[in-house]
Length: 222
Image (tube, rainbow, N blue to C red; front, side, top):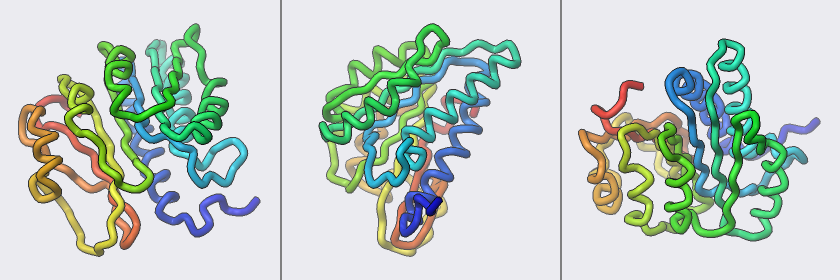
């Protein structure tokens, strides 16, 4: 079988980080809370496998399903909800068909899909999150911007984890940066959070991508 990541080194790095990041987070959070996983720009885009194994949404589904199963083996029963959003109707049709087999409310694993703009689904997403711990993955294909004010309600909660993937073309190493050094728009966006919010890179590669995990420093203990 040929390598599905051939000439897709950036995607390979991103998926490696996402998988291991989700594994660690899920096992920690599921000890005390249900999880809602939100993917704002699900695709699929440029996948090379028939089962979408090289897509972010399929990696997330498999990691979360496995984490739920392993917690059940420890007699810990948790519900996992996944929300996948995609604006392109062709990509959405492929996404919906791929994730539907995972939807099993009777076993505490729910999958919801949405065809439209991510920012227009905020109310629906909040209704799904309820009292669970939200993990929000934002990885747009090409940064085109979106109304940040409309996304604020997703993050105004005591516990929340956000992972954002940025494209960049500079080899400058950014070890730790405040929001102000990135963009005035992001500063405006993140003032809704209590505490001092810091962005920490969890991936770096020249002319590829940079992923950040953002959280308020004094709001939760993970």
